Length: 147
Image 1 (spheres, rainbow, N blue to C red):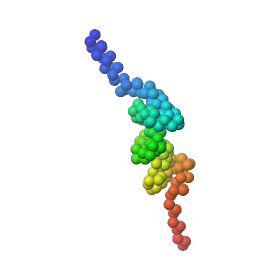
Image 2: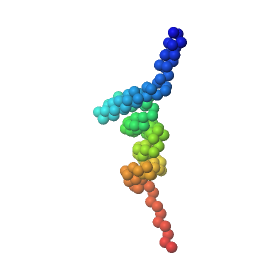
Image 3: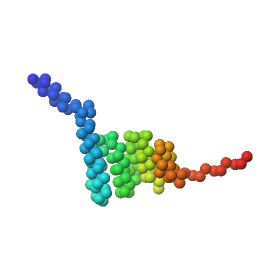
């Protein structure tokens, strides 16, 4: 009987590690994200940040939570922290242009070269507004000499 109880306890502790708890955690993280977006929309930035932090802790793979939190950090004037979050978005979804575009927006005033590079990458991944920003910000190509 003792072995069965020990087995059941071990099984209960290991299920979340095996992914059986994942769907519930993902749903909870999505709810935190939506709540944060609602609070941000209402101007309650402290509550929004708290919800975004909870979303990231609950599901560290939720790129949208890092993106939303990054925008909030930009709104709060914390560009360096926002850049970290946008970098995490790129790490989690390297083929999604949104991560590059959001990071480019954060760089646009402080580091034009990095902003241009990120807008270019976003453009290459198919984001039309990124292409427009890239064209506006990229240095003009020198005219080639006539032969």
